[in-house]
Amino acid sequence: MEKKKILFISQEITPYLPETKMSEVGRYLPQGVQEMGKEIRTFMPRYGCVNERRNQLHEVIRLSGMNLVINDTDHPLIIKVASIQAARMQVYFIDNEDYFHRKAVIKDKNGVEFPDNDERAIFFARGVLETVIKLRWAPDIIHCHGWLSALVPLYIKKYYHDDPLFAQSKVVYSVYHDDFVTNLNPEFKTKLRLEGITPEDVKILKKPNYVNVSKLAIDHADAVIKGTKIINKEIDQYIKSSNKTFIDYQPKETYINAYNEFYDKILEGN
Image 1 (cartoon, one colour):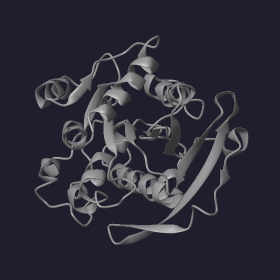
Image 2 (cartoon, rainbow, N blue to C red):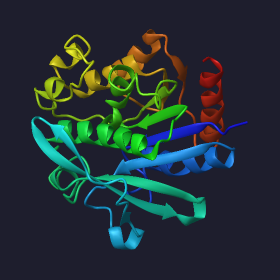
Image 3 (spheres, rainbow, N blue to C red):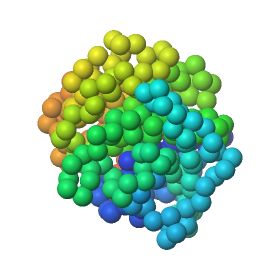
């Protein structure tokens, strides 16, 4: 029987970033799932604080070279890759000089969130999905971690739904305690639109705050995971009222097995 394919799209992965619940899941979940017999691909942004030499990143020329147009401006898409030898897994990095070369992740050294975080989220989501198309790799499950991946469910359901690579893909969205404070750019809902995405689809982003960005992701996901013990209270209630296939917070000892069984349950529901 053909192995099931799981695509992991993560805002944070250790050891490339400091250890948090999200970065730890981003590192160990793909390894665990792979060891249980599934095929994996893992993506994260190539933030400027990721040391390329120490982590032995190198550019994948055959995947690089595309331009993504955001807000009428071309942004070159560079793909890099590194290996975590102990896990026998590769991590692909979405890179772009405009968005990801600063020496910080979501906010600057003074704790101020970057004003272009909206475009960074657009570039990351589209960059991953376009790269997967270039790889000609059809994921059965797409598991998104962190709000920076929040547009992936929308894009899969509304823009890429006719692409045969994604036609059968189920999207899982994990919600973490990763709230941002400052609203995203008010034009976010316009900048993110692609063919097939209507103003009605993104009307929730009239106020582009953390809660509404999370609700957009949940609305278009097939299933939702509570990734940390504490999450935004309004989002917690929204998930419970959404009737989405759901798994509650899982501690370190159980989450790999629990998530793997969750994937199987979702796929059996096809």
